[in-house]
Amino acid sequence: MPRFPLHKLVIGISAGLLLACGRLEQPQAVQVPTAAVRPTPLEPPAPLPPPPESGAQADLVVEVDLSDVQGTVNPLAGLQGGPLPVVRGDADLTEWYRQGGVDHVRLPQDTLPNNLTLGGVFPNLYAPTDDPRSYDFRRIDRYVGAIVEAGATPLWQATYDLGGGDTLSAGDTGQQAGRFPVRSDQWASAIQGTLAHFNDGWAGGHTWQVRYVEFTNEPFTLGGCWADGLGLDACWSLFQTFAAAINGYNTQSGRDVQIVGPGMVVAPQELDTQVERLGALLDQLDPDQLDYLSFHPQGRTPVEQDGIAQELRRLLDTYDGGKFATVGLWASQWSSVGPGESGGPRLAALDTATRILWQDTVDFATLYRADRWPQGPAGLADPDTGEVACADAVVCEESPYFTPDGEPKAPFWPFLALAEIGRETPERVAVANARQHLTPVLAARSADAGQLSVLMAAPNAVSETYTIVLSELPPGVSFRAERFVVDDLTEEWEPREETSVQTESDGTLTLNGQFFGPSVVYWRLRAE
Image (tube, rainbow, N blue to C red; front, side, top):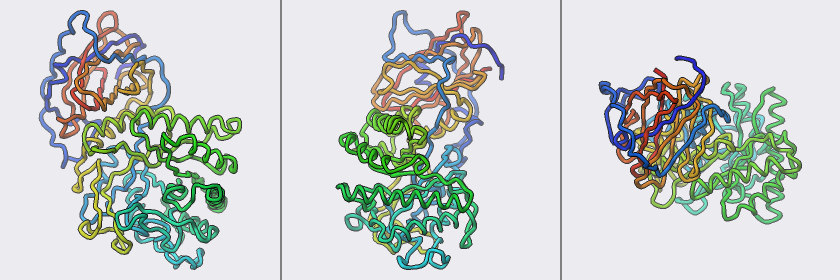
């Protein structure tokens, strides 16, 4: 691929080009399981559409300065629910996780009580924690092993109390919840024993390098803490016990397991109160007792999700004179699913918009949820595998991202785009977009600027024209331009069309385009 100094390129996309739907051979840079995508013969590139009428103004104009590198692209490619299903007979998603660049997996929440929690791993509240016979690792080993096999890192939660200390909050259809640990020192010791099993081979264990452990899930709603003064103090005291357990394990093992927490729900309408509670936690901690502040944002739009993250980042950067500025931010359970939402292109656009807006604030993000989740009383799951028959569960709800037989839905396709962008064009560059919060845009380049990427998310589009302007590339350079789209017409991940484009003598080339309904658009340009 040629190297060249940077000058100017202006790119827009015509409506005619956007309507062209040529079927192209699956590009080698994005390899997907052949069961889902059927390669077709490559058709000749479509000709460059004519320029727009003089004086025409796009609804959205995006200006990209390729000389202004602002950071590294973060795909934010975490999922809750592993590649190995909990529901018996559902497909193994390992290959899709690999292709989508899924970098971490949070063990599933809201499933059968005592299945993959500490309550199931350590079933007898009064058993000795230094005796391997006190633990039952059958189910969780199978699940964590599949995450590692998929090339991802587990995010393991220390939920909930030992001795079967979790249940469903409102009967068989409620959320999985747990009691506050009855014996906190024993709870902490069992956390250390489980980590030794995962990482150090203890109790017939493994060397999986599990290095992220999260505090009990949603402490003030599902995790057994209460929101009044006494409950707050008790909860943050338990967090100190948790942090001491992780640091103690690190000292004994020589490892660097990261402390993640408190996994607290943060909603826009209660933001001030929740930030105050988190401040009370920081008052009791030193920086070595917290590596990532985790939160569960409950914004209704990408703008609200971004506002929550910005406020928490501000808290860490400024609290107590910036004492916690090096602590990372982890959206360890988040979702764009709301009333009327399913696995369609609008959800794909909402998710992608949030991931674009979070580029400067969030270090890790874990979408809820990739696998189908069953709910029902304890005892339904197979004691060896942790699987359950969907017919036996009271609730057996399908994922917005995959069908039970392993076919991706529209919201998963952007994982492939972001994985490729992060791999091939990792340098994130400046974008000037007056509507960035409504139609977010991510632009990136390779180190030599021989490859360029533009990702656009339009969750509320009906029929809008747009122009993309990329500057600081040389005149007379030819690119092969491929456009991927996630919209109502998308059935598989392949370019909607491709064409050759070349900058004019003044270093500019203008192409215009149009959104037709909620959609995600990914442009990939490679120098020819």
